Image 1 (spheres, rainbow, N blue to C red):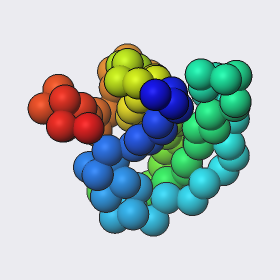
Image 2 (tube, rainbow, N blue to C red):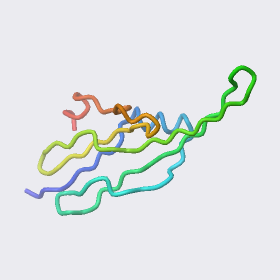
Image 3 (spheres, rainbow, N blue to C red):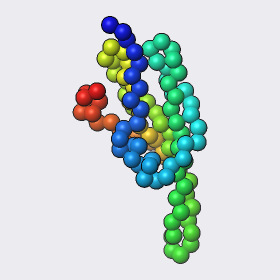
Amino acid sequence: MRRLTKFYGLSHKAKEFLNNNNATKMLEYIGTWGLVFEPIKFSVYKIDKTDKLQGVNYFEECVYAEVKQKEVWNNGPMIFTCLINLCNPTEFLYTWSEEEINRK
C-alpha cells in the first residue's frame, strides 16, 4: 500500500470567509513537511476593511494566517488547516469539525 501526504487545507467555511471579504494572498510559507519531507505550503491573507465610525472613515487591516489545525494518519498524514487572526492570535478560526475530518 502506497503512503502519501494528503493536504486538505482550509475548511469550506474558511474559504468562504476569505472569498466573502475579498482577501488577497500576501505570501506563502512552508507550514509543515509531508511524509517524504516534501514542503507543504500555507498562506497568509490580508483583508482591508473600511467602515464609518461616528461619521469618520475608519480603516482596519486584518491579516490572517493559515496554520495546522490537525494532522491525522490514514495511509499517510492527512493535514487540515484553519485560520488565525494575527492581530489577535488567541484562537483557531473557521476550523474543521471532527465529523468533517472523520469523513475524509
